[in-house]
Image (cartoon, rainbow, N blue to C red):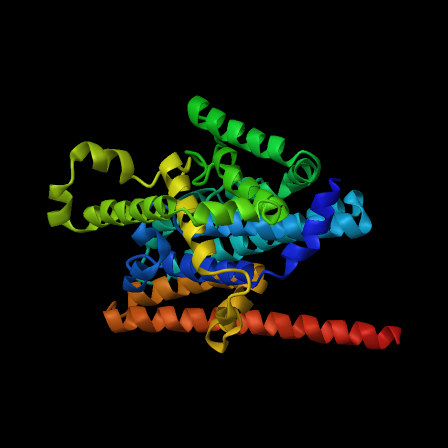
Length: 384
């Protein structure tokens, strides 16, 4: 392992911005997963080309690689790799439990209420017609019920993390170059994974791996190149270019929602930039995320005093317990959607279910953290 990297891993571990961004990503994913929800107008994808999934994958890659690199430094690569696979198994088990309960619950609700359209809306029509076959394909991550696609993607990305970690520890720049090459090849040759009963993955892992690897690269080499980044951020022209690109993205996205503005935009421009290209994550979407990151790190440094403000602690806690919070958010988004389609779908109700869901997710985060702390105290007491 590069000795410089060894020195940088512990230093990068105390960055509260990572937990903050993972918490924001979880909250935004929950809001985005509630169809026809006015509150979701506040989430990231309404203000540019990238969205909560981009943030979740990048910051998730940053956190996952940082944790495994520290473990590799302290206990060796083999131990780190085994712990990664343990985490993958936990993610996979969470996905299977969610998948089975999720489709059963939706099927039960749809067949006993006046809302059977949610069967097709949540992409589980195949489960009603061929339940055993769909469950088998679900075990292989080929079924794609709505709102579980992000977890599917992250399972695959975590499964290849031991290879990514090894590359980032010893040949980080070559590993990043390989990720870029795979991204380009996947877009040129149209590589993706098949899904059941037809179609392909919503998030192409051959393309989305680039954000994951970029996050890991920043986790291990960000401090080494911090002086270069600060020098670039000090250039007014670069700051202005990043800001102008973000404003351009906001204008293009707004033109899709405001007909009067859309008529003023050139058709070629709309056709090029307006489709979000979620499957293969278009280059302009990655560029938008990088521009956001460039300005965020400028405005919110690692030692930003407000990171420990009481108002931000619920979001930070949701980032620290991201897996439990994400799983809870999947069920809560369905519950919120069901309430809206079977009851009064008013603005007040949309705000109520959104706030209640976020509060429930925060409660789950604090409970999981408290429970882990109690287990730790019990273990320490048993040893003493």
